[in-house]
Image 1 (tube, each protein chain N blue to C red):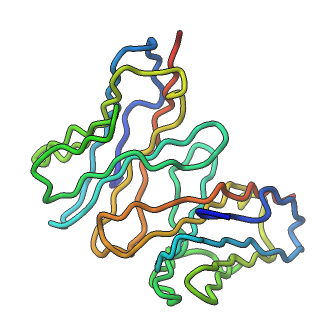
Image 2 (image 1 turned 90 degrees about the vertical axis):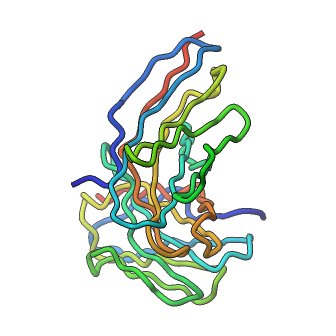
Length: 115
Length: 113
């Protein structure tokens, strides 16, 4: 079974609209972390936002926020006021266990912002 | 240099060649990682090093051989690769707290002929 599921392979959104990218996860650990990364066509992975399993409030970083619903095991990324530069692949990832463990990634969502 | 650097950025090699990928981080992190990104597949964790010790080998074939001489440098030695090993190889580093994000290098685009 997949540990990270991103059900939207691709999305087209009009500039300045808000967009929600879906992510569901599967773990039996009580302590885990959820991450979102952006990968532009140039290839580098850019960290966007983090949510810890014990965090009671949803994480926010500028135009990015994370809609964390622990009981549903979902961690959706919300981008407000989308910009043309937001066009990229977006990956949801999870770290289980210790702080040095690697990340498990979803397949990603290809987001295209249209003018 | 700042952040995480990787060399070379592009590499073409034959199946009988031996080559090495290099990763260096200038962030003072203790953990370093190798990931493989193939077309149409999620990023796959390959190896994890924590304080120079290998802590995870994600069932990677022995034709990939990692080396971590110190906390700042990570190598991936390649030999007798297959065409299906063609991919983007990404190096990352982080501190060892569960809430610490991993910082990625720009990757090495590997093509095996």
